[in-house]
Length: 232
Image (cartoon, rainbow, N blue to C red; front, side, top):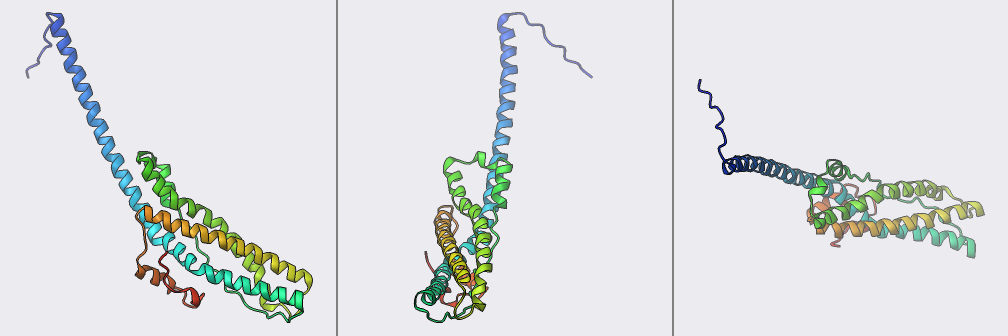
């Protein structure tokens, strides 16, 4: 086996040449390492975007659409109940007990977005890409708390189904307060749902008419007057 002994350096020029070769080798290795890391970062971004796109398109997006479609009917039944209670209070008209339809309860997920944050995937996106994904997910984060509050209000409002023709003043005031609270939450949810639809379009996510019909057909008995396909 031949062993090549290092050649002695005979001049400063040869020494500098040897140094240059070593430095070039190091720079090339670093450049290759950065190229590999960049390729991995691009792959992680693509994977993260694919997961977020699936989460928004198959889960949160359809739920937002259903809620946006139901919102006018939700407000309408609250307005009717309030009008009946006020008519009984102000004119003595017998209160007509009615069973309210509870808005569909959804869970709003942001798992893919949180995973992208935890894995630092978002740090490799441009400011525009970050903004496009943050927009719809900001609406998602706010919906869970609102949905829970609304469910609590409807638990209170279901007392209207068994209220007598002339409710006691405490019951009437309790129902009026719950109506006001539920109406405010529905209005805010409607705004959030509309914002989600607009932000999702910017991110390239939009439901087809067929997907919208499929979602509304899941609970055909709920708010039938609000089951028309809305293009907003």
